[in-house]
Image (cartoon, rainbow, N blue to C red; front, side):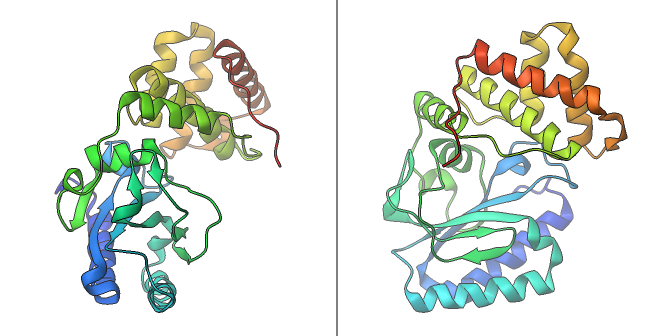
Length: 256
């Protein structure tokens, strides 16, 4: 376990993993924490806690019911568990591109037993394998398959092709811009990338006139006041989004 983790995150994940051991018993292979906290870009006010639970075989209806109860009780006892986002994947279903079938997941701390599409991607698997922090089980590199840079790039292209979510609040607009910058950086490197790395990529590749909106977005992510994100800043973010999508030939699919 990475002892440089914020103490509250480490304590929460230790309790989470202990609870999963009680619920799943021998079916539990590993509990891994990835995302921004594993990549050194964790922001207490805005970052999710992205996890992956690997199981030995598919979970039974009784397992799913027990997990639903566990998540409800855990969220009541630990309100910060509302930041938990993750998947429950059978080891045999995990491939470099994600999983071969949709798997149960957790959304904002709540258990979702039935999912109609594969949510994990090569970007997620690579992050968990190379950077994931084990709270139970073997090191993630012993459990998860290797992922190539081109597989990461393909996953990022697929995500960029999805219709972007509406962004009304300053925090949402800033996050949307940083997500795009992070994705473009990942296309260049073929590696899982943080929003801070995406902002640095933008400073290297974009004209100086775009730097203020990038810096403002990063400041909001790091807990700065949203008051500085006025209508002019929102217009700049939208204009930069359009420019980058045209420059890098990103065509988002319309919402279904």
